[in-house]
Length: 246
Length: 246
Image 1 (cartoon, each protein chain N blue to C red):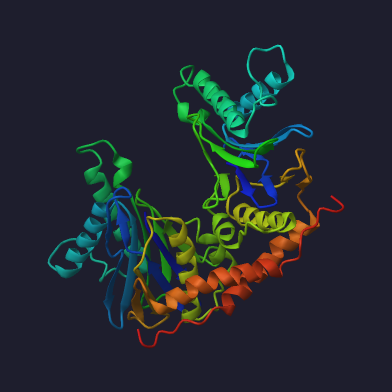
Image 2: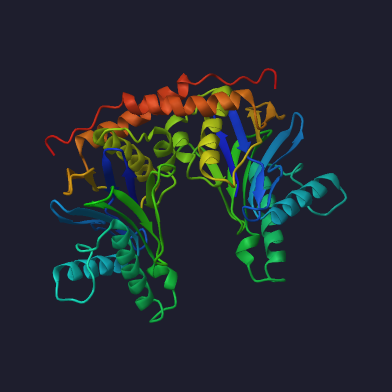
């Protein structure tokens, strides 16, 4: 499994992904699931992947090769005129890879599936965030649904829904994502540290702050322990239930 | 879907279940998923079901009929000498029902599955809580895993894990369950009000307080709204993240 979240804020975009991949619980590895491309002053693009690792690596490699080989006839994500066109290219590449595996070998075509969160900004329009399905279609985040999750989405959703605020700072957004990831990591062995994060500041047209939260990170430990205590206090602050009168 | 939780406390047992059943999102109904049997002074038994409604209703009807027809050769859950034997009877009945549907008609045998939480106390031993699988085997709650969830378990688990305390009062346990159910109901359309709850007090040998939380219940509304606020405060009480030094 995997857990990745992309948030749209008024200030820009925030991305966080875990790095655990597994084929069964007895075969786990660390793989980066966050990728980025930029042309400073013109565009910055971030992508996170969930699903079959062979599929997502093939997609990233294809996008990467095409962006580095200008002679190739394929259009590249570094030249596309809009984020919508970039999303179409990524989606087409994903469908192409999924379909190339599906008919061959085993018939477990569902196992080759992958889902992608894609976000960024290209000069001339606003930052945009997309969720791309293995079928090659995609949806865009909006004010009503300002974030996307992929992978193991359920454990970490309640806190996102309740504490997300489009006006929040990048620092608060990373804190919120760490709480959401911590709830997921505590519940699902297939999601694990280290965590990668990437900030994109609106109208910056280059990638912003990024980092990796490693096992043993002091701030993460504070959040993880502090959240248990904070949740218990929050719980006790609610009015008490009474059986009388029922 | 469904959401049911059974908690073991030092003071006894607490059960809560939702009442929504659905066959697709366009066909929802209200069905009770919590059932009980008792012989005052000797035993009290509570059961909650998730899964195929035809299966769970057949299981309950069979257990019920057998407990009311003393001439029947089948042993009954009102006569079994221990909760372990009750769990075996329920599990056997469940397997019997699942198997009787599986070979006939359509081959969608997985769709006939059901999972059961069973708890109670019989004179001569402690209160016990079991999770029964459709295959007819079962596991028992212990100090390390003091509660069981069935159905849509993920959204509501983080708060249970963090705020559960074996010494908590029944009132606090109901409050905790309402928070857990509220997080689930907010996220999954297939779990819905009204909610049924049932208390069993250790060594009472009869069913304790019970009730139904209906749509529009004032206390539930307080918890549901208060929890959003409490979570946001909890979140803001955590130390702030900083990009410096990373």
